Every structure is written in C-alpha cells, then in structure tokens.
Image (cartoon, rainbow, N blue to C red; front, side):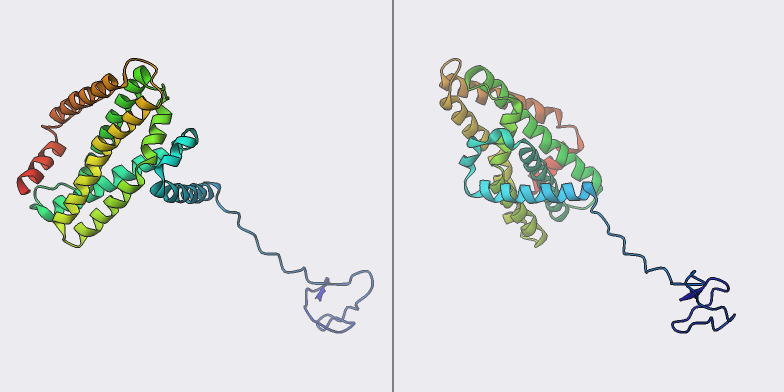
Length: 252
C-alpha cells in the first residue's frame, strides 16, 4: 500500500505510519501498481526465414541423396534448393582447394584466404554456369525445351552426393591426408562439371526430343562444352587461379 500524501509504503494498517493520514474509501492510500508483465520477444522474421529454408533444404538434401530421380516429378518447385546446392558446392570446392594448396605447397605461393577462396569460388561458379548455359541451349534445340530455371533445379538436385564427397575431402585434407583429399576433390569436381551434365543431356534428349536426332544433340553438347571450357581455361592461364593450378599440378 502507498500513501498518496507522503508516498510511504506499508502492508497493513488503517493509518499511514509516517504522516498519520487515514486510509479511506476515496483512496487516501492506494495500492502499488502491479509488476509489469514480461515483454515477449518475437523472432526476427529474417532469421526465422533462414531457419525455415535451412530445414527445407536439409529435407531436400536427404531425399535427393537417396533418390535423385524423384526430382523429375517436381523439378519446377526446387529452383531455390538447386541454387543453394550449387552455391554450397562452390564454397566447398574453394575451401577444399585452399586447404589443399595451403598444406601441399610453400605458403609464399598462397595469397590471403579471402583472395584465394573468392577466386576459386568464382571459378567454380563460372564453370557450373558454363555447363548450365550449354545444357539449356542444346536442350532448347534438341530436347523438351526446359527453361533455364528447370535445368538449374535438375542440376542442383543431383549435387548432394558431390557435396558429401567434398565434405569428406575437406576433412581428410585437414587431417593431413592430402592424397585422399585431392582424389575426393578431383572426383567431385569431375563428376559435377563433366559426368553429371552428360547424364542430364542424355536423359533430356531421350526423354522428349523436339528437334533433330538426340545423338547429334549429344555430340553437339560435348563439342560445345569442350570448346567453351578450353577457352575458359585459356583465359585463366595468366590469372592468380591459373598460377595456383600450375603449382598444384607441379606438386602432383
């Protein structure tokens, strides 16, 4: 209880113990305001969205790790997850490559983590982009004419096994098992850039051919991607990434 005349607090009594004012019905003494309720913190919408998307991606990863063929039933709905798989693939390639050259070669050859990591990441993304564009073009003239987003979804849906191999590669390299780590890195990159696109273009051209004979579409894809990738690697020869690849080749 709080006396409204002097502010004195007391629990019992009909009169204020400090100023003597009587407690009456007209609230000469008033009750202490209740303890304010705790403020309930609402989750940040951005963080909650990230959590939800991560949970969805984990479910997507498990499903397509076991049965990638299910992707053909709902590929149009998996574009975001496909992009996430490609980004994760590029991040792990960069991390594995950086760890390998850091442990395998003289540290003076390797620049800062940021420059090396970002360079390999961009190289990986451009390599995947080159493959995706070629797949889309050949599919447009010889296959069922899937959109670029559909091709990205189909491509990304087949990457869980690659991501798993790259995780193992990073672990082995950090454990100083450089040969095993390099072999896993090589298998993962070769599968993603060369073998997986061959499987996809074969599946697309035989699924529903809208142009010429699927065989010629397949041959045209192989020639086109080989020429473009050769030009791409030639352009990188004088860059930092090209020098690092040369040093890695000499180490092997």
